[in-house]
Image (cartoon, rainbow, N blue to C red):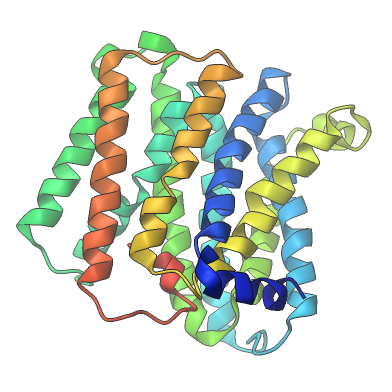
Length: 313
């Protein structure tokens, strides 16, 4: 079995191997989605098939490892549905942001999701207010202004719709994080992801263009859809969760910077996107600040339960 086969390698120093692959796959998925939408495919259709194919991968994982699934628990279903709403919004708003802006801007805005998590945590009194956290949030907000050039909407191909969708994608990811976090004590990750992705498919079938949804089944582009689903929603989740049984969340937060770096490089090299100086500065500030905030938060807490450690920001 995949998990057992890799355990020895993980314990022998390859504990970052799966985290790197997962982050790389997530980064590539943004670029692949960009290619599909540049070919005329609707953002909701691309998101729908990313979820469908990812669901098939996660169901295989659940079938192979059905132990302690928790599928009979009501709380697991409730919070998994919340997580599903979040991931549906994340996928769809992410690709909408790419369609109306660029891969680099969209993926960086999503990477600011921990800020939304902290803001919600502050509102719910789940996190204490500290000067460092407020400073980090202020830096990220300032960096978003630089990255999106919101003071000059329309500059460098960034639109108001692209910026709004990118921020909503980050907010949706925060909802997914909270849903998964509260579902995790009641069942296995593969069970939660199976429910969440089923909810995603159920939601996204409605706004998706019917003609395009059917056309995907016979299009020459179907290999791209398959790769997008496997890398962007199936295998990446499995690899990342498995790796965090052997990798500290703080380390994983740093390694996960491969995702925006990969997506940005893909956008610039393959999709011929361009970034100006302030955008590059804003992107760098967001990546460094969010990663530092993640590392600081993880180092200041006792070791988390490994079933939920990948959610630690």
